[in-house]
View 1 (cartoon, rainbow, N blue to C red):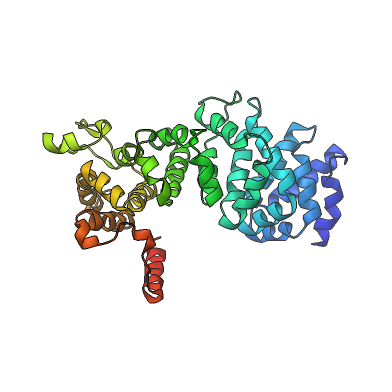
View 2 (cartoon, rainbow, N blue to C red):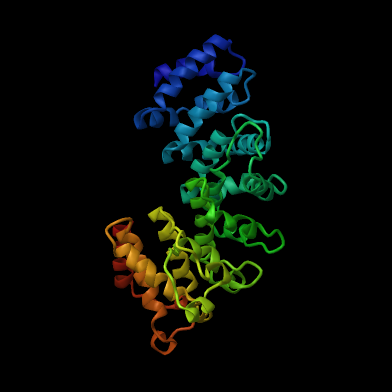
Length: 359
């Protein structure tokens, strides 16, 4: 700790370039281990200077400073320290770098913002800083949806999980479900983005999170957004259906060819099935899903997940949960909105334990 205090002044922007470079190399080395990160997280002045170096006149210094922040924020303790003490500096700097189409550091900055929003308890503080900037989420969405936005070959894929993290909170979900901005309709097409699992998984995460709010289900399933095809298409494989079944399916899923590939990543498949589970919360949602061939798609997915090649036990369990609801009649279910059911504490404890095991 004493050694860190000694090098802290040399991490200030006003320090000599050679001293900054050597000190920053030492800090970067420490961020390679959890113990080193936890040690750095206790030095608020050092963290403050490190954030300041992201605006240094020297490009190598700026780059190393941001990379150090990427490593630091990967650990929840350090991410919490940075957000608590320096969110007012960190968030605007990251936002500005991402918006700058000529920035060479937009990708690592995207990772920093993604990392500091991963812990749910930090989301509100980061959102607060973002919302101080006019139309910030809308502008970040433009960066995300405009392929090749960055002119320095930055991909901005990590904006996907950033949006997913922000949608963990009610406030974040409300932002993405704002019908006047149409943000969700701009993001959900990327659930089919084959070039990047990070971008694709982020878009699916947003979709899953907004489905938690049953008050927007009617809107999500309406022609205005129509999320069901976006959920079902990645879950579908090359299976052939008869004409009657194809007529039930959304147009996007009708008569898929033999080369149709199912989503390869089990985590993404699991999130998609969990989205369907949330849409089953209301009677209207269940009836809508049944009428549009959701059961038939899940039936084939179930066969795939039972297979030895590519199947996943967690996805299988999630699939069975949804199928169990869809095959029951509404008389058997006996509730319009399953989210309003009172669940006994002992049953809730068992459910939570099972969920942890499946994760």
